[in-house]
Length: 412
Image (cartoon, rainbow, N blue to C red; front, side, top):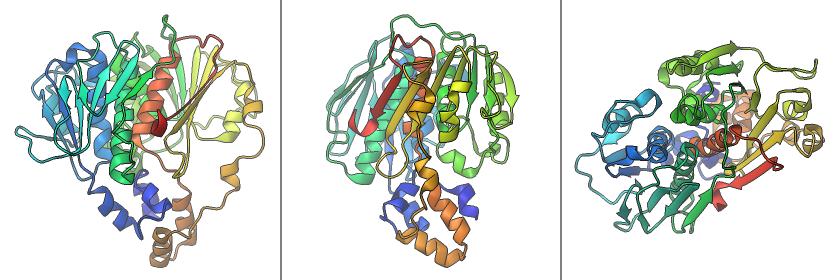
């Protein structure tokens, strides 16, 4: 079924909740969502603020299909990763963001830099602090010059979550409360010399996006092993931060490896599915990062004997897609004790009773294909950005006795 390859994973939320009667109606709903990104001059002086701006430009157009526009410091030249030396306005256009020289209209806005709320629409200021970020519906002040890149990406993800929950659910508190969030990290950080990343979906790509913005040696190791057996699809474009339309049909490993090698990273490409049931694996990489939604693999992580293993997951379904959890190993519990029992998702039959799935089934006559579409998880680029940034921050230090972290972007 073609929809399997083109499905916008955030848009699927409206289908799962029964809010729309067809996929086309879901598209029309999401095309009503607009966003303005406002950036004050001097944002590149604060690396975390620049990381936030770049993440907003990358992630927002994947969800706000009615159009995203940029106003503010259009000619200021970026300094991070692939965008170094490019004017912000030109970078925005590569992501499909419209550059507005003379903005008009009361459009929901996320502002980075000094500013105060304007108009009666959604307005949210994003400020980066030395240890995290602040979201405010009233005002925004210049970001700290020594804020962490991880916090910038996480802050952008949280701000987009608030904007989406306001646009989609009209959530009463979305964008109407001040949020202060701190990175759960120690003062002393050290980037691992090499990393093995298993899984190149939206979470794994967000991890690398964050590390790349922080530059080689700061968060991005010089040696990275990438493992994934999947191809880039049109559906990938709705959530993944490192692939573009020209990558559709390519192996995810190749598309992501090319992006990293352009920055000078040495990449080992691995197209096989990781199987820890056969034998204990002792990788050459000092850190292994697991970004695969697979309970069986998670349960077998005790057989992965890297110096340190980080595993992250994002909740599924209409009620859990904003939830993020991370586990570190070795830790106080073994993996087999955390993921005990059967995989609940594997035992569930996708619900085809919602109007959009009934319409799809009636039109296609394809029971199997409709079931596969209904079984796909809801996923968003902004929750992925937050989770990936959290992983990147945690990758650069020992966990010091703490080995599990849980957040819900809807209730930060």
